[in-house]
Amino acid sequence: MKRITALLLALVLALGLAACGETATAGPDAAETAANAQYGFYSHPSDYRGELPLVAEGEEKTLRIGLITSANVTDYYDNAYTKWLEAQTGVKIEFVQFSGSKSDVGTQVSLMIAANEELPDILLGIGSGSSGITKAAAKEYCRDGYFLDLREYMDSEAYYMHQAAELYFPGEKYAPFIDLMMSGASDPMTGAVYGYPNCYSSEADELHGHLWINGKWLEKLGMEQPKTVEDLYNVLVAFRDQDPNGNGIRDEIPMTGRASSSQYNVLQYVINAYVFCYDKYKYIVNDGVVSSPYDTEEYREALKFLKKLVDEQLLTPLTWTQSLSELTSLINPTDGNPETVGIFMAPGERFEVGGDSVYDYEALRLLEPATEKGGHGPLSCTMTYAYTFITRDCDDPLLAFRVLDFMSSPESYLRLRWGVPGEDWEYYDDPTGAAGMLGGPARIKVLDPNALNVANNKTWSHDYVLTSEQYWQQLVDTTDGSYTGTLYGKLQQQVKNYHEMGMNQEVLYLLKNTDEEDEAWNEVNGELSEFIMTARSNFCNGIWDPNSDSDWESYLHSLETLGYYDPWLRIAQANYDRR
Image 1 (cartoon, rainbow, N blue to C red):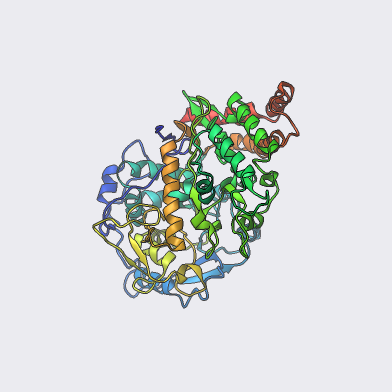
Image 2 (cartoon, rainbow, N blue to C red):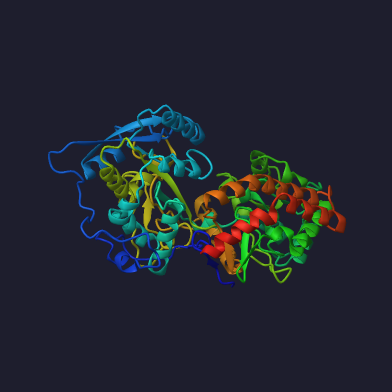
């Protein structure tokens, strides 16, 4: 298995959670000893130890929290989580409820700022990398004084955040995660921390995509799962020609997906046999040199193979045109119709509850190397965001920060997501290590999933603060024959498949650009990324020919003209060199 290494922030650790002990209730002493000069964002408070309530007896304090109204929350005031939060902190909560999408609300907040209107004390969960209040906008609002710089509070007041972080990312994972998280919320030019951090960690969701193969068809044809590209070709031919669904009609679709969406992009399943390719991130590092796969001969060989699959009706052109609902219908036939898809890529929840497909498909292993640079199982990094901001109109920013910090506590996360303990969930502690959904130890047992899935007044229906779904796995029996047990048993195998294949040694996940680099990179990135995807489609579907030197040279020339080498790769190299 290839060693997985990732640079912090410019080269982010691809963190996977491991088992650790009971939920911590005391101060994070281990966190204090973990901090060192290498990770300079954190010096744990010497005085504040998370004491509750957060206000003195007899004192009245109110915070106005602005958030996006969720259809799953029937009442924010008469709400179990709100009442618990107020009782624990001693702070009265008032809500400013925004409506619409994140982008709509981001526009509303921008208009309020432009009109110099009063902002809520806290803007909760409104920021995002690509919608809502973008990172670039948040940095500007912080520089202009509309959002407060939280660095001082992060250095001295983040008690519960670090308690949770050392629980979710124990041992040697702790300090790199803190650096990742804090860097992701920091302005590289000023050093200001412009937002309160949120992370998301789930091994099944960190896979590039979930790969499925029709196990019933393999069994009928007496074949095994493909291991190499040659095996894949032979299996797809058999799916096309030997009527594996048994209806006497040549209606089988050997392989499909959705090329326009990362989690459905089955093309990368093939490309990674030739060269590491993860379109979401694009950059790889070998011997200190940053590159991308799209100008390599290995990538060209992958395109040749993909074109062959399309030409021979083994990879359907629907891969470039079908909607999500159309793909979902294909993999979930109704009214007794036979299954028609052999291999596809899609998240597991695309299997419909009550259907047979979740039982008929197997987790498909990844392909072994077809070149010296191939044979990879691409993984996403642990995602970190700055979703939440304390505004200039907050009269008591220290109190606001401490409330956000307390919301990061392990119990707060569980109440915020799962509802009321004893009614909707309970802690699960089994010394035999009963498996959770993704194979690690189960730590909660869900009594009633309705607090998460349907309208109620128990939660705020959002993960706003530091979280880790991977740590709080719920108990599931993968052998009980249920839809849930069956699906998660196969997702566990998906995780194993990816980790067994491994990553490129170094992957450049996220850039931390200067303002000048941001401007230059953003100027070319959108058009360049769109061209790469369009060119792939053209090569696969015969509009261009990857076997033609002329077509390939023309493609490379277009890459260069659009800024592939300068500034796109040049800026990425500068990021790497700085770190």
